Length: 216
Ligand SMILES: [Zn+2]
Ligand SMILES: [Zn+2]
Image (cartoon, rainbow, N blue to C red; front, side, top):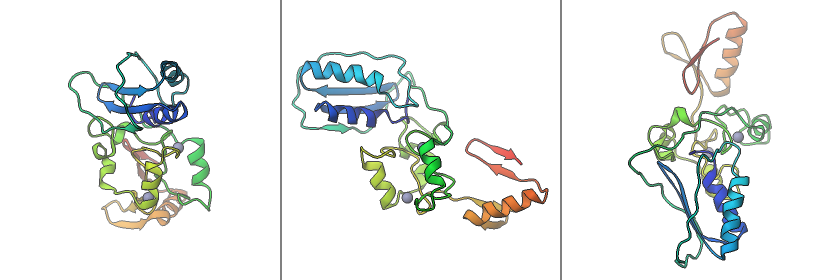
């Protein structure tokens, strides 16, 4: 399944087992080559199944022994487009416990940021425009990551490593409140507070979510 942090997990496993090689997403699944002592390679394959990330599901897997190539390091390669069968796409997933904690932490840079997400949660299906699942193929391609988000995105040790919808208040999408006619009444936190006031006055709001509208 794409967008669930599978490649970063293989990256970490390869580092732990001191294996070189590469991994890539294709529209039919993940392909990974690792190079090193045979025992370590078999251990990699075994642990891959046991340590797959929470949102992932391995429906089929197989291993093949190849002649050594002499890789120097382990890399995540650019996704390949392939004809034919299409891989599973993750559904949008509710906020995870780590993001929920950051959301309510006044010291966190995503404090009260409605579009907080990470590799273990957030939008997937609703933002995908084409496969394979990579940021340029999502509606997030319109938002260039700021330096802080980019650093998280590129750090294999970070929870947001290759999290395609990664965003923050500086660089990501924002909420706003519109009148029935479409005029902009308020933005960001003020929009949410005003929406709360309107609801408590008994007014009806259409809350636009990832996949549609919710009438409140
Ligand atoms: Zn999360
Ligand atoms: Zn950012």
